[in-house]
Length: 544
Image 1 (tube, helix red, strand yellow):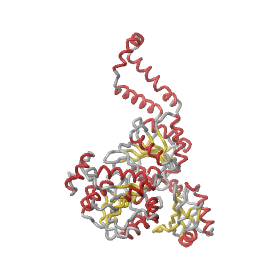
Image 2 (cartoon, rainbow, N blue to C red):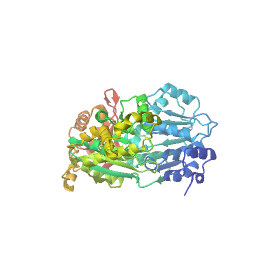
Image 3 (cartoon, helix red, strand yellow):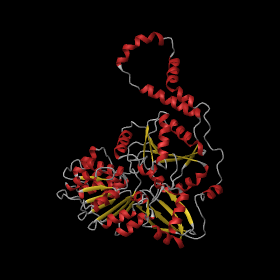
Image 4 (cartoon, rainbow, N blue to C red):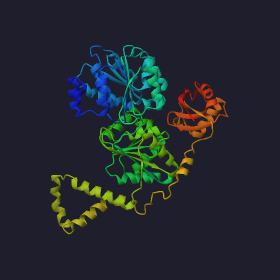
């Protein structure tokens, strides 16, 4: 078995990772670290989230940085502030015995003045989100002329969030970089385009299959009627009393609604979405990490970059519009070699989405039946009894026993246990009396599934389509039909054929027939919507 000492790392880094309890490198670390330590110019590392990519690029960076030069030498660009903070914290651990190297995390939602002051004090490594970094560049508050290494972490996520132009801008402003290292869970065409445009014959390492999901994750789906979705969620949580996980919703409103309903039922959880301030998000994440919370209810944008040890389950309360988002949701569990479960709740008209996701992740998603109410109650009682057995008693309690011994002596052990369970669990058990069967009795035939996969196609055409990106989404108040109307009206191309619309929170992808796509992009790009400049451009491939 390969050890970290075999990878060429210097002693002070080996001491730091030993202190962290790292015993042997993960596959991406084993393959990437020796290559990156050579100072290789360009590199592409493809591996699922939770496989140790931060150490794979972080340890080589810390060894290659010149500590006596107090200016930015390495730039790490990542999609979200949560991931930015996580990378910064990991680097602090890695450089425990390299006190002369300083790092800074720059991201939105907190004081830019403090970040500028810290950068000017002499940091060698900067981790940044694209928006805040561009703000610093435009203010001339950061000097990138001496940056040697640029790392693009979670590159596919950044492109999914609409940061393509930002990445181009950043790479064009690091003109003297000697190496570009790109790490990604998947390799869509847009990520490949960055490699093609900004790298020169990069070394490419793939751990597992491209676009495949983590083999440590069990994928399951449960089918129910749309109006029973919340009951289905509650039953899955109740049947897994030791569950520690994240529930994903499509929208902030959905996250808030699910949180409020479950909170009334007594579950320990909080929402995580874009309307929370940085201080509120930090508080929620702190409580989740120390397991004061059993569950997070999160939107995709808020949850990107979350790296929390020991998450047992990811629950898709609603399937994502974009199948690639599924890989990032499921990647929150099964991390660092541990196993995890990704559960999806869907109704029959969404079965085609399950098939699309299976093709993308190259793994089966197993259909499961909802447990019956009696099984849920039995599981709850068993869990409570185990908690009872594991509870440590307090010696002070003995002082009160003599006052109740005479009363309890009349009860057998079985009667006493029945009373304790009734007192503790009766409301829960009552809630499952007459609980409905949540399973859908009729599964659509494959022919019907295929025809329903075109439900979200607003118009059909036998011609070819081009895929257009637009930086408008549900956060701007759009749904599929009014976004369709908006682009047709703004482009004045009312006869254009529109194919599939993938609507996301911050941006969308629209298929437009080839003869009208270029004209639509040029007519809408640069216009303003509620004071914000619209970006609309073509993807790099067409669909027939």
